[in-house]
Image (cartoon, rainbow, N blue to C red; front, side, top):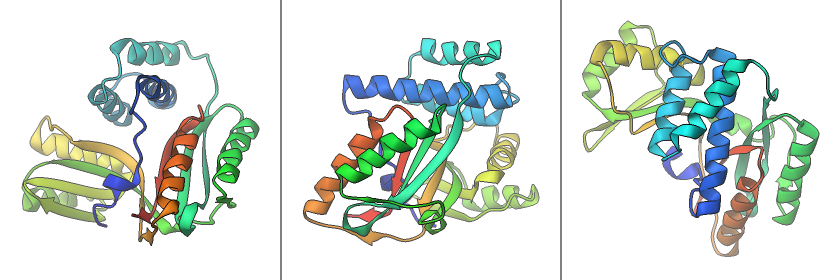
Length: 237
């Protein structure tokens, strides 16, 4: 499946203001995950992985605790996932992953970003079929024993890559909890370098010149939209 995921998902934690937005996005995602799957990380592996990732990204403990308390209360906003897709600068394919309590507002904000970048917002299915919705786990381990463990637990493994002592395991997003639990059961506590569900491009679209600068500005605009959680693309600079 390749290592494209590493530079196709765009981080926005560049400034203090941007970090505040990152905290907000994590808070929203933790709240939604805890509300739907339970607030106990030991019984909600998706939540556990999300909290661990938030801590690595230096999200303050009070942000995490506030989201969990909010989910525990059972009230609050009713967020739903939304995925917008289209073509960005240079014809690259773009996916915009959102959590929204007002789809009309969100699609309006996303469309504005596309229009400003002279990009083209498509309909459902326009480019998403060119991405794999995959769970990605990166950690230190032995490829043979890890693969054997996953296959024994009947995990549908898409790919396993080994580089400089680090393993990268790709499984369908629906297999995330199963794969993570199998690894923890077999090898105890694991320090995951990457523990996420992402959209991984199946190929790439080469872009250059002004298109590179326009794409970066386009991504910054999208990340400034409160409802946008992640931006994925297949551009190859």
